[in-house]
Length: 195
Image 1 (cartoon, rainbow, N blue to C red):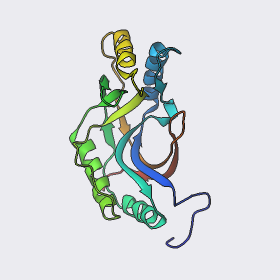
Image 2: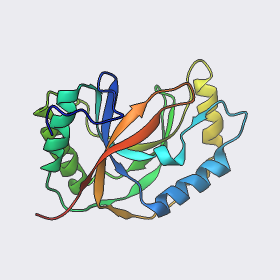
Image 3: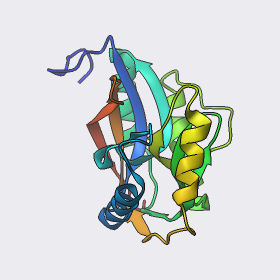
């Protein structure tokens, strides 16, 4: 309800994003890949399985009024359950990121556009970059970036096959940055259903 503060939320520092949670089989498959590739000496900061998601929109700092607006507008988003297919592992060299790519489908793009249109009403500007869905598995910063990514690349032998799943909801997350990486908490859930 407008004007009522939700207990436990610090609206002055809230950093939000909208994302799709992963299917359980995909989490298991990615966890197996991480176990096989991760080593103590790799210099990479590996993302925890519970933090894996497909980002639809990063909102960033959000005040109380925007939060209430976003929740109300996202509740109005109508989109059918969305098929999700991962399509292999890759690297964003300049950012020092190892990721699992997500196939760009018409259904996924339409959902992402509906989300950004809804949040635009609340003062959030959609990114100018093309939508590039992926799941961040690990990051490396600093001068060791090239060596760390090259060492990881040398461990990859072919591309894995992933189980497809159907997203039946999308989530509003709050991000809490920290020295060991960001921690995410679910703030709201939004069902995907026909009509």
